[in-house]
Image (cartoon, rainbow, N blue to C red):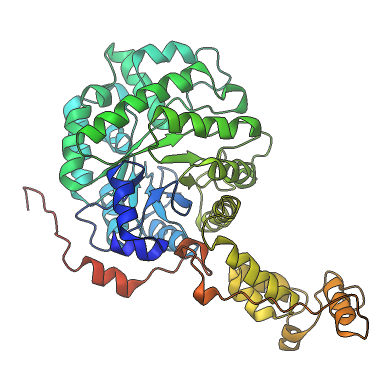
Amino acid sequence: MERIAERENEDPEFVREQVAEGQAVIPANVGHGTLDPMIIGREFSTKVNANIGNSDETSDLDGELEKLHTAVHYGADTVMDLSTGSNLDEIREANVEHSPVPVGTVPIYEAVKRAGSPEEITHELLLDVIEKQAQQGVDYMTIHAGVLMEHLPLTDGRKTGIVSRGGSIMAKWMEENGMQNPLYTKYEEICAIFREYDVTFSLGDGLRPGCIADASDEAQFAELDTLGELTRKAWDEGVQVMVEGPGHVPMDEVADNVERQQDVCDGAPFYVLGPLVTDIAPGYDHITSAIGATEAGRAGAAMLCYVTPKEHLGLPEQEDVREGLAAYRIAAHAADVANGRQGARDWDDALSEARYAFDWNEQFDLALDPERAREYHDQTLPGDNYKDARFCSMCGVEFCSMRIDQDARDGDGEGMDEIADETDLGGSDAASANRPPVGTHDSDAQLHHHEARPTVTSDDD
């Protein structure tokens, strides 16, 4: 909590109060010794999660570690390992070992792999998978316990049915076995595992809308009501909870969805996928969703799950992770600026001042993605002499508006004063998430804060 207070520029007591009241969570498994602690809550800087993971069709251990490195480098606050292919244990353990940010999983995926098909999953297998992943150091898990048998008929009139992988798996299990969702009926046993290892619930939205036509329907809100019940039950069991939110929602309904979740779930942190505000742009859904994510963050969502350009089309690779994170770091920062988060706009002001001063190297250094900013500038003006030039290739020398403005202010006229604003980023009270550049994790602090963290071993060890 002291480390988090330092990163958020908040008082440690405020951090403690928010966690104690369930308004924020600190995903930090007692066995994740490389973790640099962070917090998720609407009173703190808006966070971004990056989904990584393999499938049966693509990616191996080295590829997944490259994605993890890319995600952390470009500013992911957490990562979720959504692997469904081979070597699940090896990839999960490597991610936890190498990740300074919290690692999340969806244990139902491994349960399906071990059982062979959704309907063959047993209650015992589910609990075994969940406990094993907790022992491996996973910090938070998506648990689709809110999808109940009585909710399934409510999806019949949808355009895209059930689009959540976990939701569809649980629906198939209930249809084939004629019994209630085992994640719901075994919820207290799951709470006991989570309490032992300090794993945070990420209550899954298994009936989230998969297109804007299905948004805010009866099925989505019936599950949300159940998630409110499960939130309070986890709190009673001494377990941290955040709640996952919808994936496709038209722009005019985004804020209402956030406010409804906050009311139904008593202020538990809201973790939203997007939401995508239109369905027309495969290949550009990092943009369609970042628009909705900005509005969700402004309305009080605590963490945004990124969407990459590959959404709906294929498994994201390293460059897709970079593109998705850029879009979502923009969305999160824009939401923090809109919400008046302390010091958040200092970054914008400092970059604007560097831009007006034609300090190109400073502008690159302050950019969200410094390498990309420099690369684009240097495509047309690569020489070092252009790093002091009072123009770029957009307008050229003659038509650069900022040069013309500066020359007017430097002239003999009396109507315009010189601009002398200077933002001190070193003295800014912004949280670390709202300071340039992103993707820097204090390894010295990481080691210092975790020297005393216990190592959890299984009974077999």
